[in-house]
Every structure is written in structure tokens, then in C-alpha cells.
Image (tube, rainbow over all chains, first blue to last red; front, side, top):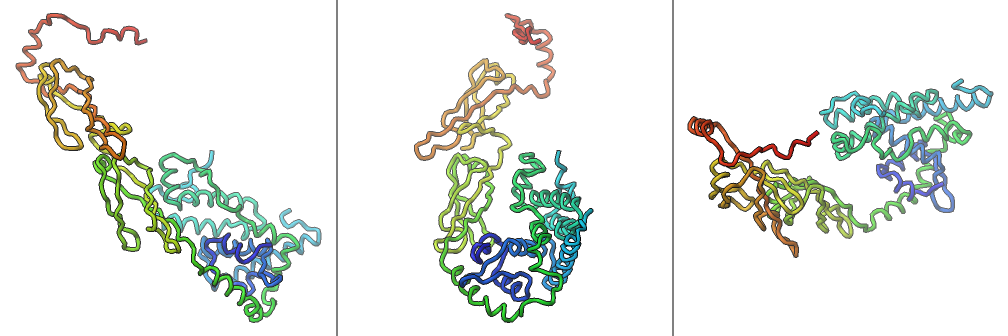
Length: 90
Length: 305
């Protein structure tokens, strides 16, 4: 769990404007705890993934929700398979 | 052994940064581990591609790799291992970002809820902080490194900096100009890495300079005045008679200029006898010449095995 300040310091390429938009659109879902915004490990890694998609792979703002949506479905299916006792990569 | 990063990205060695970026993008899109959760080989490939890009995208590292100073593994790995998100998304905590992407907490409310926190952060950001140090490279002509000089460096933003080069600087040396870097409170520094251009004529060893001085046969045998190029201009030097090849002559204080309490270096001349195109008279003389004291120039080499 890290604060907005630490998150911002950790990713030099992360702008507060972008992050605020991503949160508003539900791409990143931190929590508010005692008047502070806190990011769980999965949120931090999701920010990293979004930055990599955008900066390294040139995915634009329009394509980003499409890719995240598909990825979320993909991981959802894999978690369900695993819950059913099926190892997805087996 | 690790593969050559140019081979990994499939670009020629002289590829421009744009071409490297494009090649990396193409491969990253294909192999990113978060996009290929069921394919461990994609992760391995992505790591290789990232490491290659890590070296080739950084002009300094690329230069060091090209010069053979770092190997293909680049020793400095990317900050975080790729595929960090996947490790969380595969676990139960991944449910936070469930598959029904449209159903999520009301976006507007979400936005309002955090707007104040972002505002706080922005205010903290805009508080004064020290500016960044900017790094530049500056090529210094050989003679300027010998005598010292003032160079002008034009910055990307159009400003020009006057850089005082003290005598005796070497390649790789860094000069720090306080308050000439990035904006901030206080302003950052400009760090200027010097690149001393090598001389075609002089070889440098510390504060001393070396020069191979070609002399003719009569000059070597009979001695006499010769004009010698030095960093300070041509200088008349009288050769002693019987100055054999390899003889060293030291010109005190004609090397790197004195600076502060450091004395000036010396210029060493090493004689090289240059025969050139022998004329007929010389050939005839040598044919009929019987040395008074015959000498074997290779004496002392017998034990060479």
C-alpha cells in the first residue's frame, strides 16, 4: 500500500492529470483511507502496465480501455478456470 | 553468451534512434508478458527485447556497448521485472479489476471523491524545489586542452554557455557550472562532459606531450638547427651531431600549460631518421664507403629467441 505521493515519485513518466483521468474512468482503482489515497500493489502494477502500454507500445487513449477491458476478461477467465481446478497453461 | 542487442531488435548498427524505438515497439506489442499470460516463452523474449532496448535507446549505453565497454546483458537491468501486473491479476486480488468492465463504481463520484487529494498533491508539486542537473557533452580541440580556452556551448533551449576550459583537461572529465541547469529553486547545475579531440601529431601522456620528429640523414649525422612544431608554434631546435634514431630530446615546459600551482609539462621529441628517395650521389657514396669503425646495428639481438 503506497500513497499518491510515493506513486508519483516512483514513476517519473506519470502525470497527475493522466492518473486522475484513469481513476475517473476506472482504469485504476485506489482507495481512500483516512483522507489519503492509497494504492495496493495490484494498482501500482496496473499503473506500470498502463504506462508501458502507452509509452513503450504507443497505445493511445482510445485504445487503452479496449485493451484493459480485454485483459480484464482474460484474467477473469483464467481465475475462474483455476477456481474450477483447471490449470490454464497445462 | 547473450545475443547482440542489434540482432535482437533486428536493426542495423547504424540505425537511428527512431528506427530502434519502432523496432522495439513492434516486438514489445507482440511479446509483452501481460498480454501473453499463458506463454512463458513470451516473457523470456520480452526480457531479452527490453534489455536490448535498454542498451540501444540510451545514447551513452549504446556508445559504451559499441565500444565494447559493456556486454549485451548491459549489467544495468530495467528497473522492474516485466509482467508485474500479471502476478497480481492471476491471484484472487485480481478480482478488483473483474471482467465486466462496464460495471464499476460511478465514475463521476469517483472523480469528485479524489479531486481534492489531487489538488493537494499538485500544490505540493509546485512548491519550490531544486532544479535538475543537466548533462551536456562538449568537444574540445586538442590545442585548447593544452593551453586552456573558453568554449561556447549552445544549449537545446537556445541559450549559450561560456565554458572555461583549464589547461590539461582530459576526455571524460566533467565541469560543473553552478546555476546553469534545470529550472527550480535553486536552479540546477549544468554538467559538461569534455571530449578532447586527439591530435594527429602529438601524443599525450599526463601533462607531457610526445612528438615523433622526422630528421634527414645529414641532420642526424651532422646535427644542426631544425624547425619543430610545438603547441605554442614552430620552434627552432639545434640537434647535436650524431643524433641517432630513437634519441629523445626534451623541451622543458612546452607540454600542457601550467595551471594553478601545477607546473607545465614537457614536450619530448623522438627522432625518426627519414631517408626518403635516396639520390644517386648518396647511393654511390654508400657503395664505396668503408666505415672506419664497422658496427653491427643488430648487436645485442642474438639472444632474441
